[in-house]
Image (cartoon, rainbow, N blue to C red; front, side, top):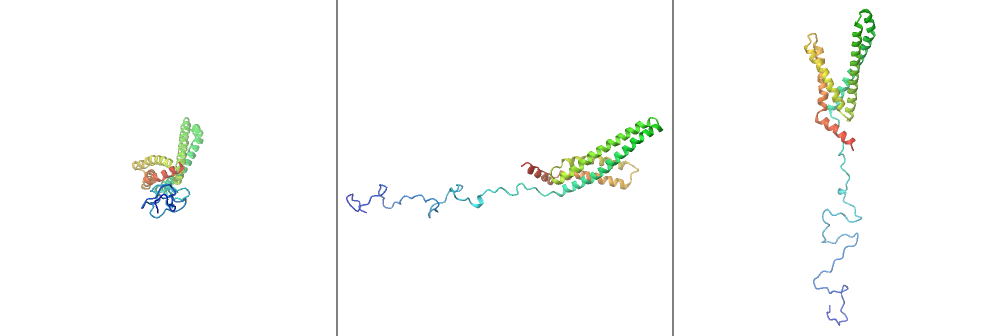
Length: 224
């Protein structure tokens, strides 16, 4: 290329500057949508993709599937609920027995007063005690049945633990009382021991870590 300013064949640089020998021409940005030329560096890691480009499949946020999944019901919770239903059935029978005996005692109080003056008041008080015990047994029965249902559904273990604690107290008195009673038979002692062990098992099984995790997962799921 001639450098003479009077040379008619001399061509001007369109940008007003002559390109020196060995210099690379300025690189123009690639048009929108074109792939970068060979030798260009890719975009730095972590940079957001250009407008219109889809993100990589593994970068899409779908959430962690199964993060709030509830674990399977532990066998200990099922066993405790079954024991609770057994105690609930016994509670129904105990409630009926106390109420029926109380009604009979109350009805016989007037006859006893006529036969033995002053004894009718004692029979009436005894009937009242039996009815109160029947109402307490009814309340405990409701606690055991409702607690077992709520435990099986994973909603709460509190009611069943409370009912089991009451059962530990009552069956413990029955068991240790039968040990000290000379008139108790071996079958009665064994039966009292079985009920005492079942009541302890209810509280222990519901207090174990698998049961705590099971009910905790249900609470977290309801709190969402």
